Image 1: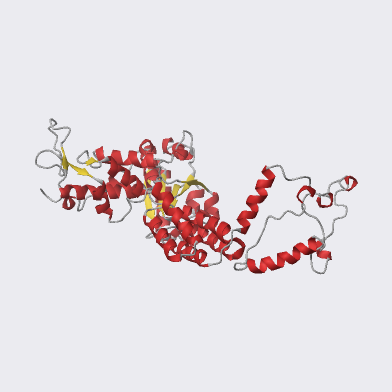
Image 2 (image 1 turned 90 degrees about the vertical axis):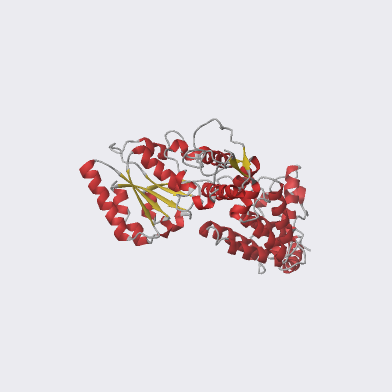
Length: 463
């Protein structure tokens, strides 16, 4: 049998062949495709209609369907479709498209959709060149970006466009997409059999990215064809050519989970984003940071990154760890964790792995204290148990009319009037006077906080 991998040479990639031709075929993004939504209106409004369609900026992770939506809208509405990439196009190219769009509108009454991929790579001057065409309705701009438009798109262009956020595809959407690719004539045309375990592996591997799922499926189909494992063709009586994957006996290659693993050459199948492994790895990651083992923490971080875990999820857990496990022992830790989260949102992956690694190592190697975590938990427990009492009269707001007549603010001592900035005064309600929530440790910065707090409490108590 001819090598199936050779049959793929020169062929249009499966992810491109399976691009929807209408919005009805689009997987996921239901929040953007409700009846009457801007995208649906744009797709169903005739190109010759007098109403000017709104330009849109599609913001979302790779593989969520930005290009797919733009092309489906163009096909559905009958509009002329022009695609530019910010990587290769310059100001001259943009101006030529605008002039041609104006000509098409005035001479033939046809509107143009300009799809601009990776608009965040455009300079300010290049984005400025888009403004006349967008503002005057020469083109309907559909721009795509994986980065936050607030940082990468100029304000005048943002104000003239609708910002729509795409979400990673859900597992059900990805599963339906894979099933369609297996059976659709544009895809594998039913010439392979996909085992349930392999299908689940593809969905896990994709991590919300449709392109990744289809690319892996196509590669696995080649591996399965070369492997020779087959399944009886359920349509043996059909005279239709079973295609290049079928063996001599009319049997179909079977794609297994092992074929998926061989095709992508990554140990992703041992990590289920929705299963036990997901929780086990993130648990081990946080406990390694808490336990001050940077090597173990980096190992688990690498496993999550390679498995396609959402980097924002990892960043959120680091922020929580910085506050819960480190706290006042090193207040800088929270700033670093938040900075890492912002960096991931700003630059995306794979570069986002670097600030994540830096934050992980910093948090793992710095001093630890859960005193702030324990303090808020203890305070909440008291409040839930009814232990809160009335705010002392001298602390109540005395700025509104009649407040002083009620005794609000009477006897309040202004701390800044004291040479040391602290005065003897009760701040807790009478029912909780003397209650201690925050008990600092002697770790890191908190050692100094502990000594200072002891002096503060003596002054507050009048001792």
